[in-house]
Figure 1 (cartoon, rainbow, N blue to C red):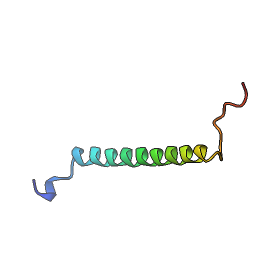
Figure 2: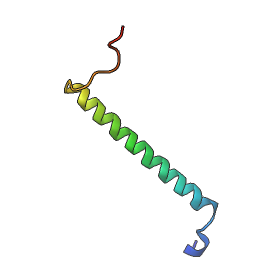
Figure 3: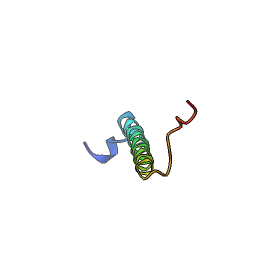
Figure 4: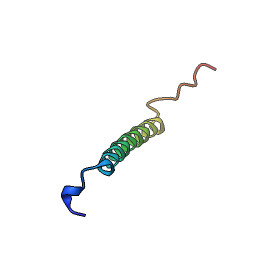
Length: 50
């Protein structure tokens, strides 16, 4: 397939999936950061009101 034909619905979904991947990656990074902080005792999960 040449590049001129590559502008259609397929490209659109590719953009969407790339966006999703970025979002997931960011999310995973945030989670890892939070986990590291918890391990270091900097933050606690919100379970202090039992």
